[in-house]
Every structure is written in C-alpha cells, then in structure tokens.
Image (cartoon, rainbow, N blue to C red):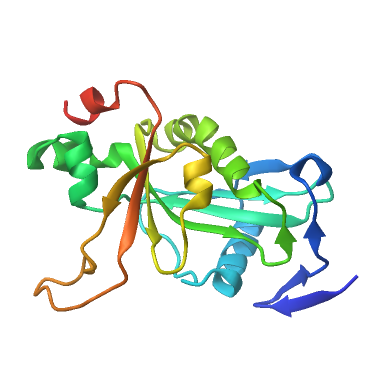
Length: 209
C-alpha cells in the first residue's frame, strides 16, 4: 500500500475511487478539542489545500471525514465570518449596529478539502450536508450559542461552486476583488462568489435582533 510522508504524517495515497455508496460507512467528527486529530487535520490542510493552513483565530470547529478503516478522506474548517460583505449583508438586511452585535451567530467555511487521492462523486456535497446538520448544536456545546447562517467564498477562477450548489447553498453574488486588509483599495485579489446556508428558518429575525 503506497504512502507519502508529509509534515510528519504518513498519507495513504492508494486511490479511493467509486460511487459514494461503495466507499462504505463514513464518519464525520468534530475534532477541535482532540489533540492528535487536530494535528492530522492541520497537516492535511497544510499539505493539500491550495491556501495552506495558518492555524485558527477565535471560535472555530474542525470536522474530519474518515472511512470505516479510519483513513482520512476530507477536512472542513469553520471559523470567523467576514466582518462585512455587501451581498451577504444585503441578503440579511441588518444595519451596522446589528452586525456588530450578532456577527458571532455567523460562521465561515474557510477551508474545505477532499484529499487528492479521493475521487468519489458527490462526496463533497454529502459532507456539507452532514456537517450542516450538526453544526449549530456542536457550536452551542462548545461556545454556548448557536449558528444561524453559514457563509463561504468560492474563488471563481478556480472553482465553479458545484458542491455548494448541490448542497442547496444560496448564491448571493460576488466580492469586489479586494482584500479585507486593503484599506486604500489598491490591493487586487481574486474575485470570489458568495454562498450562504441558513440553518434556521427565521435567521433574519435572529441576526437583526
């Protein structure tokens, strides 16, 4: 069984190919409080995600997807939502004061990785669906408050957002192509499409309270 050793981790590079039903039972687990699993989670993102991994700041949840044998297949990181985003803020309909007060009730899907050895159609949308089912309850358990809305930003030149569309996320438009760190509006960054997923029906009332 071939493997590669990267960042102190041994990665099984045997291809996982086939229909989702053929992969066998999968486990989706939140691992942000598990020391050993967190190391493997971080190593996978650092090695295989095109943005790499620089750690987390603030509230976050980290989900690992493993096969029946315990092999890591996918990782999903959720953390702080963007401070402001015109398409999202227009969709919610909140004002500045409401956003300041309730931004913690949003989270952003900042990293989503299917390991490169894994080629299973519909796996990505299945993972999103499973995580969203438990996300708010997991956040409540860890931080004492729920999550009402999830957002993600998809780099348009790299990805079509297919898995988010398949998982019924809502497309809201695109960013202006500027970094949140660009106070002088001169730093150009890739344009990203904005998607959101409400976790409760009356999310606008909760976010505008």
